Length: 168
Picture 1 (cartoon, helix red, strand yellow):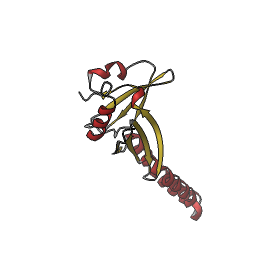
Picture 2 (tube, helix red, strand yellow; picture 1 turned 90 degrees about the horizontal axis):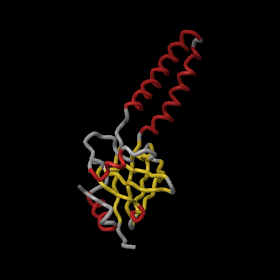
Picture 3 (cartoon, one colour; picture 1 turned 45 degrees about the vertical axis):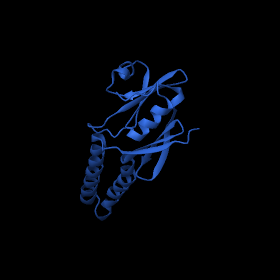
Picture 4 (cartoon, one colour; picture 1 turned 90 degrees about the vertical axis):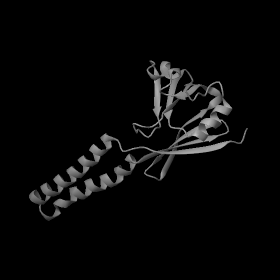
């Protein structure tokens, strides 16, 4: 063990589909309130309250952040939902990867559109982000993890696996 440690925190932007879902929840609450009040009377607000509560419990799951933790040659990809719930989504050992390089690099061409490749996107979804990919095998399945490492993480990974990690 080389005792190296680095972590990078990335906040994912709000996706368009999540904005649409939130808008539909609030629209459904408004329609339920108006229809309930007009058709049922004073207790017509109950469906509205139920829809608002559903929205309150569903909305935090749209707020997703990722944390990449490099420890002794392994990179853990953690998903943080609503700022509270943390789950390790993937753990990759640099000794077992095929390649780690920028997605824009010619070295990643064979992995970007390969058949039977499972992609795991841990990026911020921002258009100006510099994306890297880690190609690795899990059993007989080929995988590609997409993420945004820091310069420090790239340096540590390059020291650990210099023939597999590229910065071009």
